[in-house]
Length: 236
Length: 236
DNA sequence: TCGATGCTTCGATGGCGCTCGAACTATCGG
DNA sequence: CCGATAGTTCGAGCGCCATCGAAGCATCGA
Image 1: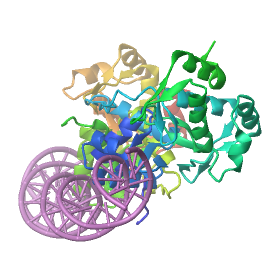
Image 2: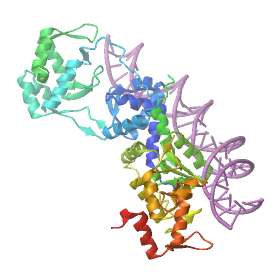
Image 3: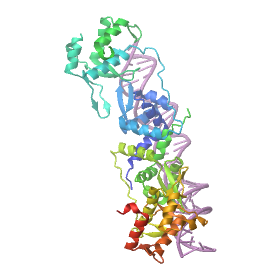
Image 4: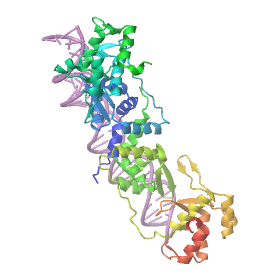
């Protein structure tokens, strides 16, 4: 009698228009902040917060907590598949993919994030590190851990490229930390290593830090050098 | 702004517990009546009626209207797939497949339905007729038409088996009509042809009609003869 | 023609949950 | 340390919709 038809509860989570809009938007695979999702759904931040809590509770979303930001992503492929099917079945009605385009076009190329490097180059560095097996990401209870392990191989490689890994490991600061990139919506490298990477680029005169803003300007030669050193797969 | 996120409306239809129970039950592929579905969902008939109207309106269900009965079936594979995925995703919770087992075990084998034959044999006849291309079923706007076309081939075959098709075609009554079988939940043959088929079985002394009840008793030889004549695929 | 059965429509009731304002906490950046 | 920004919590308002009783319609079967 009082058996909970769980399918109903699940559908109920999707059924609410605001949540449906958020989920549909997240189908892009990008990580979006609570405020952005609030805009997508045309509700206030506090309403969105409640919706997101429910979706996260039901494990439909995974949360990247990051300082004062909270980035949300679809939890897994299964969730995406259900949404995919649902969208397909609803094809006859006018399904409008809401545009949440980033409004700020400046500062997009390269910048400092707190004390480390952010932007496409920084993301490329992080992705390459994952691909090369330099670092290990860890997941715990639906939340991606921000703390990341530097592997033996990664340590060796980066040391040989000129980064003082040994010294960094002696500091109290966490060595590697995944940081959600604002413009790319993917992780880049933070922590002691991330900070050192930025310093490294400045010292090598690959880039210069703009005073009074967070813009970091790479010169052409510097960008090439950075790619050659840390993002080899992107260069022929 | 006022763009209807159709995915939400669709999910909303599934989200209501009573409707979810009905849909889950219909995943079996069987056709169920409004009252049965009301029982499945533990709601009154009038509530179920409203739910079913919504599901049918949204084209999630197809309706076989049949006299005072209304049989509902899932509209198509897509709907079933969405439900399938949803059930899969909700796997962690206790999804209890409600039992709507037919409570009446008697009268199951063979009986008259109005003036024609019903039961497994009648269903087998109908299915064979479809398979052999004797009849054509038609669909119009989400509702399966009860009226069925007898093909040239079907006419010839049945005539050769001893049924007076020519004579039946002259009567005012619809020749072929699909009728939802109560126990099998599949179609059997009604209309002038269906009535003639029953008469035919009685005249041939394959079966006898019970006075005062709708039971039709086939004798062993009669059943074999019926199968040989009209359901060949079932006999080696 | 008449009762029984299956289903629908209508109207009133009630509750769940979405919504937002206001106040609060936490982090960032200077 | 201070202002700005991101997000949360709380409480009150309110609208939508599921629900059922009662009445009505259609069909069946005798």
